[in-house]
Length: 437
Image 1 (cartoon, rainbow, N blue to C red):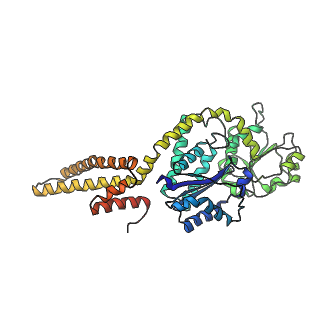
Image 2 (cartoon, rainbow, N blue to C red):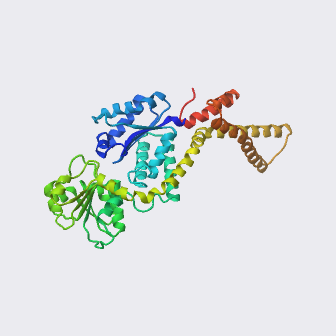
Image 3 (cartoon, helix red, strand yellow):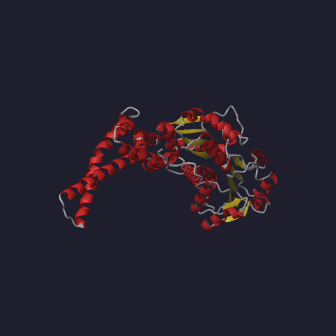
């Protein structure tokens, strides 16, 4: 069953950010692509993650042919959205235990460009929420995500991997805020509403700076003004040249440059001139910034800076890895328990029914007259007895799952009487959301 899980994608380890952007889907496209994957190829569950450093497709299906051909299938699907089909883009694949291990690494920050960063966890949670809202995932992919969140939480609690400020937003902020810079009137503009920008906003407010939030449409950021004491201006206002900044940090999803050379000259009239561009597709021209003596930092530059602080957390990798390995050891047991918990419950109900019926016959046979309190006590006793008796076959089933050959549990069920067989098969199908013919 574990081999029904698969992850396919590309990451910063093998491809430049520009290459990743070439084959990325926006939210609307992703929804259509995933729905097509479900409808045309009968993939039971699927989800799509896109960040500046990775694109990953999560699937759960019992169809072996889909697992074998998923990279080809996904290329064909994204090709329908006129996404470039570059032969240089090679999707990686993680399946079964490898899929869980990979996602554990990702959610904990072990597979991030900035070791230990936590923004990816937020993005994974948003991915799960989007997939749930659109009925793309059910219990299986949800289980994959939830287990990864548990691992990330344990690593955060028990290691120093996430210690200090290591997110992309914090690294960007540390480019222009130094310990010897006490001036809280330093003028900082934040463009966009991405997680990186919102995290930067929170961090700057905590440090008592007063950043200005800039967005194409003010209406879309009104809720942020209600939440944070910030000034807001539109992108058109910024481009008018009536607002001046020492630093601008941007991370928008725009597909073209959002500020031209004339506007940049008008914006940066102070002594400090820094533009930090964390957008997947650059928001401004680096050449224009250089020509106007504006210090320009791209996403790749910020990632490069992260490498300098990489060693601080490197020592904690072994401890984090040990936590992941311990989860993987028990993973099959967890998956089996999730699948067969319904059987354990059905067995207990059968034992309870058997015990209750036996007691009723005994009472009737001996013409015993019992008050309601006595009957209630007998019911409690029957439940306790049922749990004890059901524990024995439950342990036996777990032994078959973990140590027996494939089909052991099915053979066990087939050896039962027809009615009990039906009860257990129904219990399994209800867990999967299926029907018994």
